[in-house]
Length: 269
Image 1 (cartoon, rainbow, N blue to C red):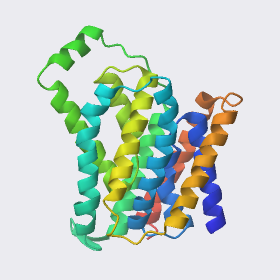
Image 2 (cartoon, rainbow, N blue to C red; image 1 turned 180 degrees about the vertical axis):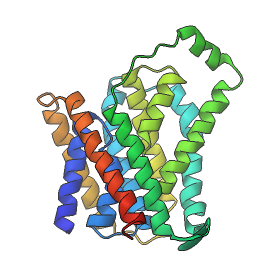
Image 3 (cartoon, rainbow, N blue to C red; image 1 turned 30 degrees about the vertical axis):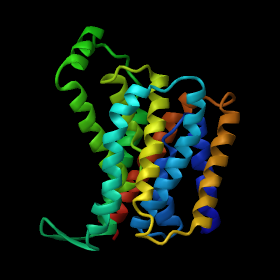
């Protein structure tokens, strides 16, 4: 199963290289269901893998100048602090068994069900076609100048930080729309800035677990290197394969994975 897991991470990296993201969200299910990690450990390993792969992806955007330092500063600081606090203080404080609304739920089930919901949300964003923004520039200018502009972006940063810290996923499907609609970045610059935010959030969140969990560094670095290898391979063949056509198909596959995770943890547990 370990070999199957490494092949899965190679494919995940390949998908990320072809469509520019999204594949990393499948890292936790692979670690849990194929490589037999606990959900808590899987989210820790996923943070490192997502952080490293996002950093590799962000470098090309940085070279092209497709990263907004201002948007990064507004969004990243709040999310970075939040993700570190969630990994350092919140996750260790969650008991192994939780009594929730009259039900006894394990920490493993709670993490995986929330992760399943996140996978479903991400898959929907990949399946549906992007619609052009019909709002006038004046309205976005008014929002940016209003008192709620910056605080609202900071609040969204906190939300993304909590999601990243809790389930070990980057949350790019949330960050990109926020950067486009509320900070008015162009699509490519939003992607590049999002990758930077995800990289910083994930790696900072991972440091919150150092010392609290036993980490097999050789194994973790091997997985990360496999995923990065897939990204580089995907980038090389991206000109021959249409990422836009592949993205909806991968979205449907991700949707099925999300449904499987929720059914597995709730009905088949």
